[in-house]
Image (tube, rainbow, N blue to C red):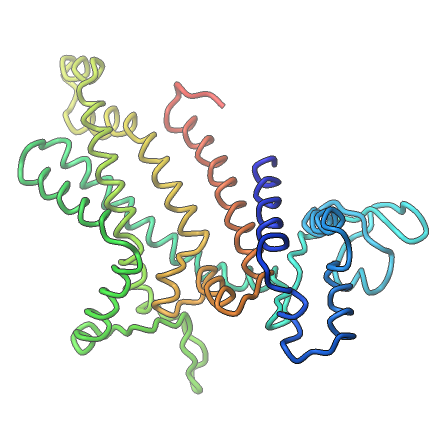
Length: 340
């Protein structure tokens, strides 16, 4: 809660105090008249002191808030009244209100929720691919140290870590979506849906190939190295030697006793990358034209659409907070020595 409040404060100060752009003029355009600008400033609470603006912003974001008992307020916030405070106000329950886009006039909540499934699909498949391959290759490298398997895994992971996402995305799009398009059948632009006038709308699974492969490169490289390092440490522990001395099957010792106890740092890495991918794979979504949180955020930055950017930042912070809680729970499940 305190982390999220800190993020909200930073976002408010950054967009309403530090940045010189006038939100009212961004909303109405450069040719708007003074009366229209005054009405917009009143609607956005820009005519009030900063501390009042911040309090109203918190009130908009809070699920439990105080709002006017009017039809306009009910339509704007879509709240459920809990009890009446006075003749004009009531304590209400509602979804966090992230305000409206300056450009499209749509509610930011609906824009983010509409884009989130695309990001969720992309992030889930990417982290699944990276996790499976990364844990397997890291374990193989640890079991055969100082061999060609180990050297190849480490060298490849270093290359993967060194490749920035935007560079890998451009390279993958150019090579497989342009130069080798006739052989791969892939395209640079990857729409989520294909609209056929006869058969209707179809999900484009092929469009996922290049973005998923590109997104999985860096997390795969990190997971390989962390798994290798953690497994090397675990395999040298006394209880592993004791398990071998008792005559336990090598495969059982490695995969059940060794890998399970080596997974804690791996899970931390996977959760961090998954949260980052869920928060919006900005460059990858933008390069491949994939509709997700990252793409609409980049589009909003290009148009100075601050409410969308602010909403994306807060949504990102919430994802990281939730993922940290999930990881704490997973720790206690995988390693019985860790208690909640």
